[in-house]
Image (cartoon, rainbow, N blue to C red; front, side, top):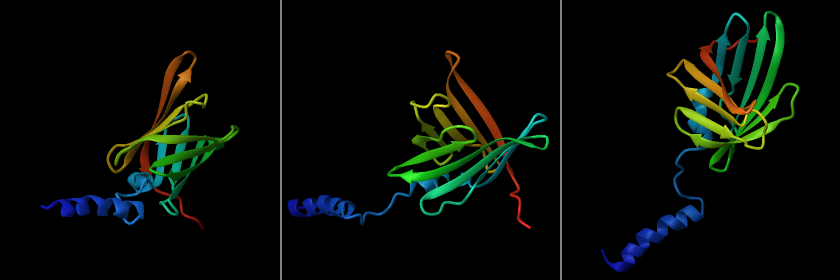
Length: 162
């Protein structure tokens, strides 16, 4: 291969990338589409459920609630949106100020978010376990030690409207 052809093969892909014409490797939000749907963790003490919308506008919306007997104990609204190559997990829990966590790891079966400036949690994660199971978790410093709380969810049927 002559020198001018070698330069052409090196320069053309860079030019396409600079112009935004390079082929996409897949959006970050598409890597976590397995979170879409309804998830539930049932125990004698409480039922925790999460529901995630399908990705649209490079974002997913999540709602969560914890119910004990017939009473709502906690709820949370989450906006999961692309932030460049990363994902931002914008949590709005009941009775607390909102916090944003940036992804530090995204695979086809897990995602981890971090915000070291938050008191607790400082990390939030989701690990897919097959098609019908997800373990969500939170971790961070608590009482002088690092504490992690797991939420093992099973896929649940989404409630339909009237």
